[in-house]
Length: 262
Image 1: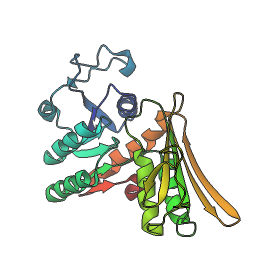
Image 2: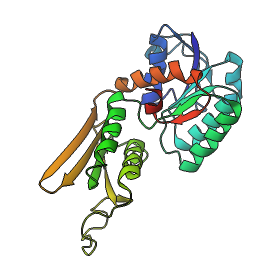
Image 3: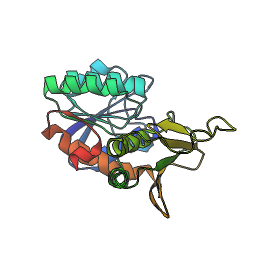
């Protein structure tokens, strides 16, 4: 059984991840982490079926349960420190927190390479989202004029989403830099055309009732192509998280994207 700790267990994604670990016979939830927690165990929490799993408020204390995998659904500034801590103690991180900078990822990958520890940072663990990004990358070779519309719940901290940025990065490698629209026309309302990423536009929608949705819309003379992905339940992400937990320890580097483990 793989010994796993979950950071950010009080959040919606973190609690879902902790329950996923408990539900899998080949996983062992040896601890959960949140520096703001006041409880010392999950034994009194019906959300987690009152299991007697220790709650940690300090990273160093987690080493006492000797975890092999660190699942992280926290916030960017905490996740970077958590991932660095995990790698430096030979714990494989599986990170779903978005907001990492390119420099953050490079520094963490250097640590993983030095320590020979496998890990994963993924903007999205939904298999349909990973396929959507792959399809969009292929389509960008033939339809360089494209815009991204990403839609999330109104409590999401970052905009655009990590998935939208990853999609844009993947398409940019195929299409290059290409300004879109009439450069002589100005916006009558600033921001109306969305964020500009190497010429393509990204639009972020934040509304209650949404979870995670993305539409990649391509246009050409006389035709168009739309690739859309919808997440209706956070449980859908857990297939990818479980897959990552089973595979990361077989590797000796930190991957940036779930597609590298598929």
